[in-house]
Amino acid sequence: MLGGGVVRRWCCVVMLGMSLGQLSLAQLDHKGLNILSKAEGALSETLTLPERQWFGRDQASANSDIDDYLGDLIVRLELPSLVKLREHYFKMEKQIAKERIIIRDLREKRLFAVAEDSSTLMKYTPTDTLKGWTASTRGDYDRLIEIHEQNLKQYEASLVTLRENMSDALSEIGVNLAPEQLEFLYTTVTGEETVRAIVLFNSAIAVSTQLQTLMETNAQDFDAVKRYYGMATILHRMVVKIQTDFIRKLEENYMVQLKAYRTEAERSLAEAKRLQKSADSAQKKVLQKNIEANQLAVKAIDRYMEYLKVQAVNAKAILKAAKAREAIALNTYSTVKVSLDVLSLMQESQRDFKAFSTMQVPSIVPFDNPELRKEFMNITQKLNDQ
Image 1 (cartoon, rainbow, N blue to C red):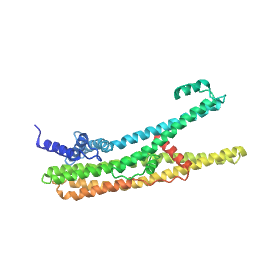
Image 2 (image 1 turned 90 degrees about the vertical axis):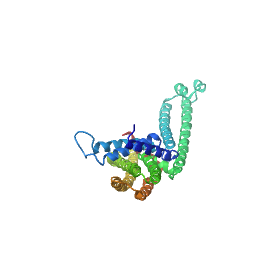
Image 3 (image 1 turned 90 degrees about the horizontal axis):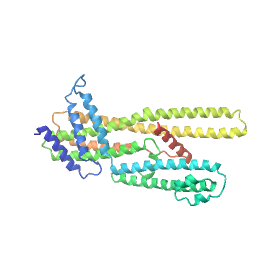
Image 4 (image 1 turned 45 degrees about the horizontal axis):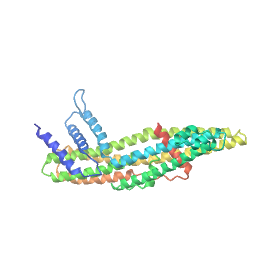
């Protein structure tokens, strides 16, 4: 037989599930609701547990459990349709990279081919894979290069369509990100995390709104009101976790790597300038191109660093506000009885989540030329490979 507290907790989850069942934005299924309920249960424990102890459960272990629940909750609050589109987008980017490598290799092989015309065997080979095996002349390689360049154009066109579809999916949940903004975001190492955070903040608005409704409809049940408010408090901790993890990656990983890349580029630039002083005219031309390439690399790195610094400033502003809101929510939750007076706090929280979503959207960094954009993407690839 279930105890009163267990029954009340189970009923809260069921009622919340009924209320959110048709809410496409938050994407909370029953498993997600159970995660949120368990996180609130652990939060309730922190009010009475000792801060730390050698044996047994303490606040540290309860908070550790909350962090684990938050990881699962974040997955549940994402927009499934957008997740699938992003997965397709990244697969297409990998395919484009693969095609470029194939084209480069074919051009190298063509250089060493002898005859100009296409071979007879190549003409009657049915598939592109077999054509690659049978290619022997420059004409054969020209044909293969043409095929893969067409593939490349089709994949790039698919990226355009996917960006448009992602923009439409985001628009449906009230997030206005144009395809051009998404194109820029996905040239950066933080693009995926940025879009994900924006979606999660908007999902938090939806969940918080539904929790507020449940608090209003259960106004006479103070235990239920407090429990729902505890669930809402978990959303603030989620924002804190998202921004803390993001800032750590920015400052301890990406920015550190960028500084190393800049040092390397400056060293290469200085070496090229030194060699140019004693080089002949032909060598000077080669070294001048090296100098220009390193100067472009330094410019791209500086632009990249500037962009990440702006993101860090915005993330810290969000984190500061989120921590302040979480502290107020925890203080309110820890009181003996949480009344409907907290509804105004819930509404303020929803406004905060909306503001956080807006603050998370970065400004597009304009590229002066295609070469700078290409260098920007090269940096992103290097950062992702670390």
